[in-house]
Image (tube, rainbow, N blue to C red; front, side, top):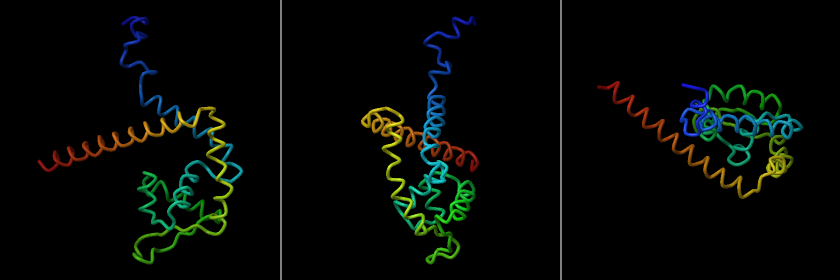
Length: 165
C-alpha cells in the first residue's frame, strides 16, 4: 500500500476517524482544563468526581459510589483515603450493614461545595464552546456510554454462555 492509499479519506483505519482516539484525546484534554481550576481546592479530577457524587447523594456506600462513578472499588480506595486524610469525608461502617463502608462528608467537605459551584461555569468559559453544544455533546456521550455498556453486557453474557456449554 502506498502512502497516498494509506491516507485516503475512506481509510477505515485512519487514526483521525477512530471514535476511540477522539474520545481518549478529548478526555485527557478536558481533564487537563479542569486541573488548574481544581488545584486551589486541593482536588484531582477523580477526587472532584467523588465529591460531586457525595454532594448530590450523601451518604453513599463504597459500592454505591463505585456504581455511580463506574470505577472499581479498588480504584476508589486510595482516592477515598486521600479525601479522608484531607478532612473532606469520613469512612464508617454502614449502620444498615456492618460489612459495608459508608461515606459521609465532613463539615469541611460540605463547605467546599460553595467554592466548587463556580467550577462548571469556569470550565465552560475556558472551553469557549456554547453551552448548547456542550449539552448536546453530553447527550451524545451518554448514548455512547449506554451503547458501550450494552455491548459489554452482551459480551459478558455470551462469554458466560460459552463457559457453561
